[in-house]
Length: 132
Image (tube, rainbow, N blue to C red; front, side):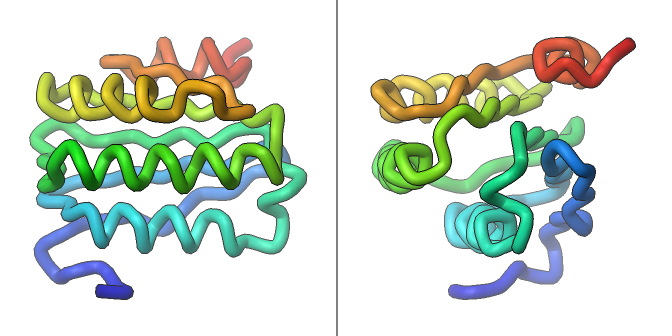
């Protein structure tokens, strides 16, 4: 699958001069997540961006398994070697998504990005240096 299904809501990616904010809601499959990730990485300013902020809204569900998480983490780890120094913050208010994000961080180990998971958007924004 190359696109995003109708019952999924991946809001338009918000780009700034420093990074990107991806907001996800509803039911997200591994393929849809990968499609959003490809869209982000294909942006003409991707190489210059300092951060990616992935925000799951309350009630969002991520339909994937451990192998899907591993595949995504390993692909991102490879990409991080080409574009080092980025911070990736994941806001996961739902316990299952929080756990999957922590699993991602474990598989990503050794990559060239800093990856952290939060339950509150304010904490993620602070970690990224977006407050003040």
